[in-house]
Length: 171
Image (cartoon, rainbow, N blue to C red; front, top):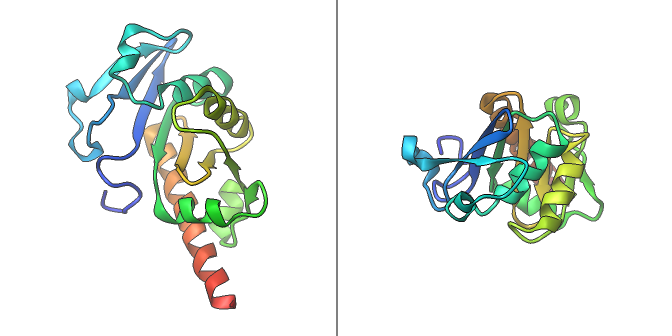
């Protein structure tokens, strides 16, 4: 919350351990996480616990199946969402050196929240990228750790914020 990447009610996180993932429950404020805020579900198949897990469990599951990710953060950073809606192409190219070096470009994918379409599009984008933006919705960032996924989330937002203000200044 401190870096304003997400309001406390929005977003979710998960980590992978073998063929299981630990993911935040639906509706749990991210600034109030406790041991009972997390649910363990399988990666290979849905379970009865999916009904209390994040509504984006299907997306996390598909990312783990199709990438080497061990941690995922889904957030709703404001400038990333704005830039996705202003986009005329399928990627955002960072103008800042850090974004260019670490992200290269940022794919923007489409699909309704919590759908198989979104899960497939996001996993495909993250096969070759560390982060992606869902059009009008938010970001998914992957890493070996939650700290790495957080770094990617923050860098996407920083890159989008700089691009937004740069493009505004050019007008």
